[in-house]
Each structure stands twice: as structure tokens, then as C-alpha cells.
Image (cartoon, rainbow, N blue to C red):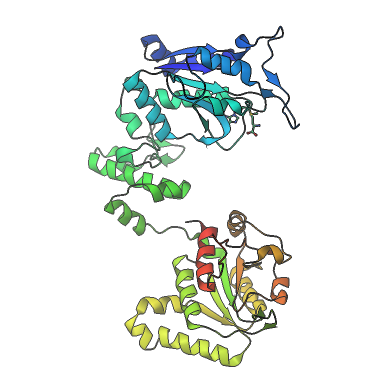
Length: 443
Ligand SMILES: C[S@@+](CC[C@H](N)C(=O)[O-])C[C@H]1O[C@@H](n2cnc3c(N)ncnc32)[C@H](O)[C@@H]1O
């Protein structure tokens, strides 16, 4: 496979491309590289390759002239003409480069023998017209900014090269690695061990010493599943899992990230249609559904709050029916969820109960469809999740037309509003609670 590398610093690559498996592959002819410096295509005496950005701003931009000339020299024509092979632009703002893209590039090179051209930016980046004129694909190697595209190009070169047939020597090893598609299913790799059997008092898992190949394969699969769910839950969710994988994950209880999250359904003080502050009536549906969602997401507790004695009596009646009455007999699961509902008069009651149970005063966080107008700092969902690691959080959900100013005054922050896709934005409080739990706990 041949790589054309367009760079202002060809010397950057000596060293990384001269050792290990890459050097071996160069020696055997499997890999080859050529370097193309836009400075060689600059026309002026000083061989200028950069200029100030139009519109102002810090730093310099790589000029399109010398770079375009370099690409022409490699056989690329502007505006949809000749394309000798894939043309990738390393760019912090490009689409994320991953294993699937590496595999597609290695497969293309093996099948077509086309070279892969990598363009390394420098300064504050490249004049945007290069991307318009040439068939480039901008890729990023991560959400961080490097000094130049060279280090990113090296990542890409290694990721693609090791997928070329003959590069690794033992082909199966790349098939079992992290992110590999196929049997591994895009999961992270299982932990690996080598000599000695015991290191600093830590022994290698016994199954790996047993010679039981089926047992070892099962242990590795399960370790991969657990590592992926722990570190990259989005990969686990997207992986094509077998029924036995799913059964395994279900059987291994997750540490409950939600145990520090509490919620309260506030019936007073809330706003009515005319924006007057008052008390709203309790609704059976909200109690049921928030209790079920709280249980499912492993919340520390759910408080139903109202200062009105007749409303609290109604709550008790509902709970009795479902926890120990006819409802429990026909629907024991519901009984379990409703048994977790705690009755309270006020927000202060709920906060005091959380403090008593956890030993820490909870952070009170409001929820509102108009969060920006609450006069409270908006805390993002990841920030709220981060808080949960060190302190309990009590999320307040308002009934009626939302929490009244007096309820908001008690809060330290407000969660971001759930935005609608159009003009209609009227979620029921139980639906909003479910979405917000999921956004915070991010399953
Ligand atoms: C200092 S950076 C320019 C950053 C640019 N001003 C921005 O804010 O996105 C210079 C060059 O480094 C390369 N680069 C920086 N970070 C990268 C990343 N995460 N992935 C790929 N290339 C990157 C690009 O080629 C870029 O043109």
C-alpha cells in the first residue's frame, strides 16, 4: 500500500516510520511512503505557504495555491476530475476516524492498489476552498487540537497498515482486538496477562491457566462485554449481541449510578394556567409512572409532596391498593415500584429526608420547560451526572404549570429544558422525568 503524505514537515515522519512492524513492512515492500511538501510548489522567492485569515483572527492559514498545486501534482483534478485514490484531510473538526474507516481504507488499498493521500494541516488550518475543490474527506483523530496533522496522520497510517494482509504475521490477532467488527462485534478487548502467574500478589485469573479453551473463550467474551459496558456503554448498546451475551449482562448487576439521585413530584407551590401560585391535585398516573421509572433507573428515592392532608390521604389510599391491596395481588411488580414512593409535605421535608438517609444535604435541582427564565444557573446533564459521584441530588418536578418562584428559590440550579422539535412542547411530568433520568444517568 502506498501513502502520499502532504506535509510541511516531512522530517516529522522519520523515526516513527523507521521502526517496528512499519519498518519491516517497508522492507518487504508491503508499505511505501512518499512525501510532498507544499513549500516546493510555492511560487514566490520566500516560498510562502501561509497567510493571514480574511476577517481577522489569530494565527495564519495554509494558502490554497501551493497546496492545490501539490494535489494536482499527485494526480487530483479540482472540481470532480481525476481521483487517483482516497484523499483524507486531517482536521480537528473532521468526522471521527475509527476502526471501521481504517478497515475500509485497508480493504480498498488491497483490492484496488490505489494510494492513500493524507493532507496534514499546520498553523490554524487550511483555506476552506481546498475542501470545496478537491474530493477530500476531513477526518479527526479525537476531540483535541494538535499542532499539526502529522501526528494524526501517523495514527491513521498505523491503524490502516495493521489491517493489511501480511502486516501482523498472525491475522487472527487483529480480528480479536478492540473495535474489531465481525465476531468481536465492535467491543473493547478483554484484559490480557503474561508471566509471572502472580505479580505483586495479584494472580492471573485461574481459567486462563486451565487449558479449557471453551472456558477461556467464554471468560474473554464476558470480560469484553463488561469492559465495554463500563467504559463505552454506547459501543455495547450498538454491538450485535447474541442472546447469551444479553442474558449475561442482565445477570451481572450494574453498580447503580442512580443511587444518589432522588426526585420529588411537587404539588405545592406550583403555577396554574394564569401563572398564579397554588396547589395542584395528585394524579394516579404520575405517581405510578414516576415510581416505576425511578425503580427501573435505581434512584435513591421518589417523594410525592403536598401539604394538603386530603391529598396525602389519597396518596396513601393509592399506595395501599397497589402495595398490599387487590392491585398487589394482580400486579406484584407494581407493588415493588409503589413501595418506593415516600410521602412528604414540602420540598424541605424531602431534602431533610435525603440528608438523613445519606448524611449529606442534597443539591436541589429544579426542572422546567423554561429553564432559561428561572433565574437559576443551568447545569448540563453531564455536570449533574458528575455531581452524583460526590453528593446526593434532589430533582424537583413541578405539577400544574411548573414550579412556582418560591419553589425555585430553594434550588441551586436548574436542569436543561427538554427541547421540542417543533412548536408543540407539552410533555407530561412523568414523561419529562423519564427522559431527564435517562439523560443524567445516560444509559
Ligand atoms: C493547530 S491545528 C488547527 C486547529 C483549528 N484552528 C481548529 O480550531 O480546529 C493545525 C492542524 O492540526 C491538525 N489537527 C489538529 N487537531 C487534529 C485532530 N484532532 N485530528 C486531526 N487533525 C488535527 C489539522 O491538520 C489542523 O489543520
